[in-house]
Amino acid sequence: MKFISPGGWFSLEYPVAWSEFEDSEGTFLFYNPNKWCGNFRISAFKDVAKDYGRQSIAYELKENPTSVAVKVGDWDCAYSTETFQEGGAWYTTHIWITGKGEFSFECSFTVSKGGERTPAEGIIRSLKVRTVNDFRKQEIIPIRVLEIGEINEAFDWVSTTIKKTLSKDFTSQESDIERLQKLIDGGKLPIDQRPVWENVGLALGTILENEMDGMVWVTVIEGRKEYPALHFQHSSLLINPAALVWDKVKQKQPLHLKDEFESIKQKVEGILNKG
Image 1 (cartoon, rainbow, N blue to C red):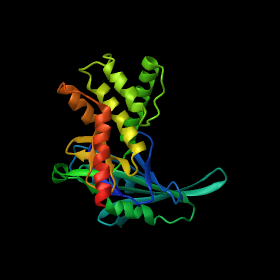
Image 2 (image 1 turned 90 degrees about the vertical axis):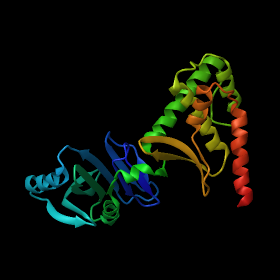
Image 3 (image 1 turned 60 degrees about the horizontal axis):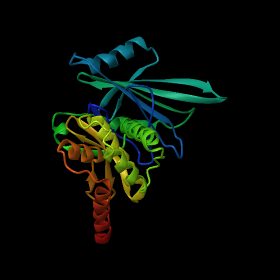
Image 4 (image 1 turned 180 degrees about the vertical axis):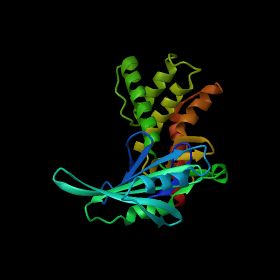
């Protein structure tokens, strides 16, 4: 599975059974939620110095007497370990400080004491600093924590707004399309506020995900643009629900969510019939 950091600085690949989870700001956490074999964390830093990565490794080797120089794939690293006890169990954290050019990375892998560090080394081997050429192509990756947060915020806003204006619940079911439409037709949503309409679009997206098997949220990277979208698995069908709604509003075109839902549903059925 591929991960591209917010802002597109770097990419890495992690095992298929793993997922990204929320951690502290600027740190990205990955692990297998079904069969835990360790927590992998990575933090990235950028400096104006063109040899910042090499400096970071040298500094760690000098200041940390337990660190040693190792190579993981193409990456030179300063490697060390820390063992600690928590809740009556013993754990070991493996730490790699690495970098190239103006980028420095701190990677860690916490496992049960005596556990393998191999999964983390595989991730580090896949680590890549993205270049200008990488920004020129579209990338579709598993939904990141960042975009999950955007979807959840949109859902909460729409749910609260519908509750206040219509005294109804919003549960992301097909029947809620009518409530979303009433919210739109009520004339109380500010036409010029893009975030409001993108929230409506993302709320529509939660309905599409719930009602259509095989429709999953992904993160799309297009140059400097990064946004949540819906991808119908094993096909090229990609839907940006936030843009779908905002583009209609911006161009002062009629916005009928039921029609949009049915149009997407027909495309899905067409793909399934071909299958």
